[in-house]
Image (tube, rainbow, N blue to C red; front, side, top):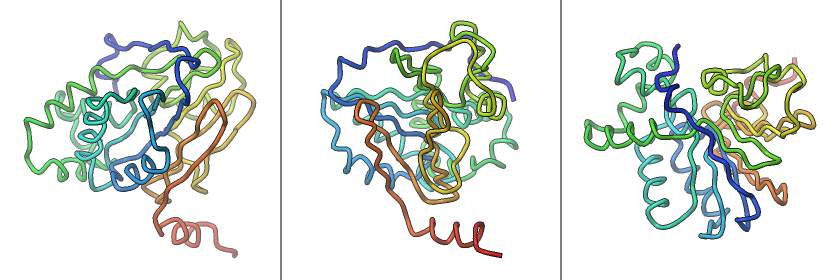
Length: 242
């Protein structure tokens, strides 16, 4: 899978002290209802920053609703940044490059169904995706969908790896940076946010398996969750005692 728009990638640099709170969520995957419930708990104000760390589409029933709501919140004056996830990458590639099958196998069919042939809005959302940053640099924290190559400096990272990397990042110490990496992409199958080590915070709560989405506020380290009944069903199926 190639990264459709690597030449357009950028890293947004922000100062955390410019905001009262800095919330990060990730991998909502079309579960618009859970997103709205999470927002109701967070109660964002114009003095806060919300980073949506990729993968708002696919699997769940309302990818359309996700991007429409995000657009409305930005229009209403809230500070929201959405980073580019691998599912945004698959969606852009499928529609603009014809790579349909990989996307459909990974939840793309549900995304198509959610748009109900509203192609004008779909094109608007695609334009929004292609202008998403690859990461947000907050100084102490670095928010990116997949992770980073642990052997490279931040400035030497490749956009494809930052969007798609998993094991090579998670399983190895970071040799070229002191930043704490806040990432999604690799689901935590217990539906929780994990502090993997001193430099890695994993925030993908596995929404389309567990029915859980989570958010972390980076100044206070407060964590909140929203979930459906699916978590107990999932845990019983996959972690029941033998």
